[in-house]
Length: 410
Ligand code: SIN
Ligand code: CO
Image 1: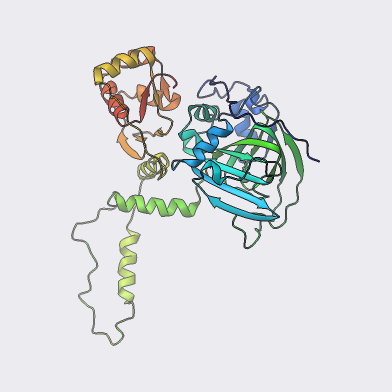
Image 2 (image 1 turned 90 degrees about the horizontal axis):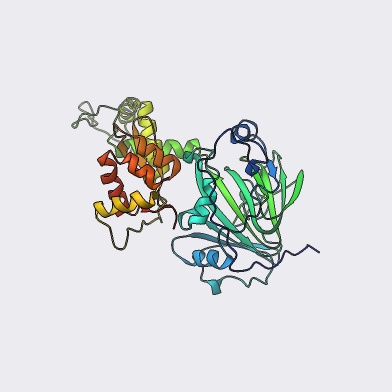
């Protein structure tokens, strides 16, 4: 009989103590089992799994079960329900009202909610602990809730993932097997043959890091909750498609296209097979396409815009009673400013990217890079940096758009 963990109280949430953000690369941390982030990146990142006992001692779930169910009921969240009742895998997509979910007393189901960091400051704060890896790689924080025996089956991901146990126990079994063939005819990706090589039971605060393509299976031992901190690695296919779209949208910035340039066929002869694609058409278009050129700057412009683009369902909430620029400056000087949980702010050599928009970095850019790296500016820092009045004006604009908030934490 599996050992049952105590029932999940609906009100237990993590303390809002946030760690230093971004974490210093050369300081050993319990989060990585006593390694420094620099050592972890060199030895494990994209290379091999790492089990860390008590990565965050005393950690409680960033959301209570009720808060997670509430999020799963809203249009904002991307929720999936996976059941394995009577041995049959089933998958449904949310939103789910609480009464649509199976009873928490029933075994073998799991609810997965993506992008929790966008909606809860505590989840965002948890994600911030992992900012020793670039934001450009970060995807989101997913929380799964499962009843005894629940899970998503043995599978692999193309992502790097930190699986952090936040309530109850989960048995993880992993394998570096080469055979990643999936079972046919199932609504979710389940491996045909799973040959576990290692097995551990994780308790609250324990964490397992997995690089892409390590087969894994997590089964709840009693009611449990797991946070997945996922880092995306876009595929070459996705990058090529999106980059070409970006170039086309920007009028192919790097290829000098004359306004009147188009396909011409003054030598076209009369045809007897009108449905046949003319060879010359193919050749001429090939020559036009072969002239497309791009620079590293175009690639950076694409990546920054693409990676900071909010997911399609994301909507920003402007302040209900918006402060004027002067009131904003006064309040920010006292309480500081922070990026909204949904805001992505990246920067490159020449540009910065905020929520999918690209702009040139201002000549005095310190405030902007500092805000991007820390996601907040303390009141005192705001005052020091606001000697540059363009900063206050721009931050006020972002505040009006709901991209920036006043205060250190809600
Ligand atoms: C889960 O939390 O149940 C699934 C996470 C994963 O295996 O990627
Ligand atoms: Co997985």
